Image (cartoon, rainbow, N blue to C red; front, top):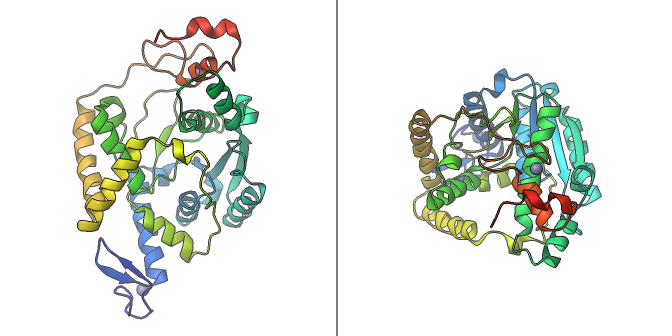
Length: 323
Ligand SMILES: [Zn+2]
Ligand SMILES: [Zn+2]
């Protein structure tokens, strides 16, 4: 089988949504070009500094590899957080990540929940369970990751924070927010970056139009060694996301290209949504940690979780919203 693009090399990938058979070189080139197009829409090519949130998983490696092919690596800073999950965060993986980024010429800043928050994720989950809190590990993890990534972005004076969310992740989140009727969250999605508050660095997702199977294939064809073992808290993952994921997978199988169509339609809707919505009101700050929080709240969700888990001093109890 010959590649449909170069018509020279042997094809190794069948790209279902375009119906093309591609060789390794043409496949990687296709993904890079699509990432570059999206990144330029997000103005990443004009940025002075961009923080890349890297987990060491395939998506974050593809993100670093593709961006450094058209952005000077000296403008990129990778940021990695060790969550403190026993048996999951491993030293050899962070070393591999470090070496890989070094080859690309990208600086890596590594930190941990323990260092920044004072507790590992395991410690937070244990404390919450002992207090009988019905909060999943993913809620703690997601909330504190967002906070630390944002803080690192502010500290390093970056113009943007880029994450490795792929097309599958993005469409799942859009559908979930639609189901929940969460308009505020929904208007943050779209191909043009949106700054929600002066306390938040603008977040961009250059891989948002790349299928998950494509990032896996890119990583595989490039011979990346990446974090493949499953997080032990996977069973606590929200069930709605798992169901939406399954549904979207079925739709894509029956009609290849569906996910891309959904996100493109959504991008055009999102422009109209934003036009009718003003986001200029400044968000209030958490009285404990200083992070922006939502209206009518004194403290942020993260601090609320720590108080409820008994991990912050008793005196903070008075800030808890009545529930
Ligand atoms: Zn080719
Ligand atoms: Zn807070």
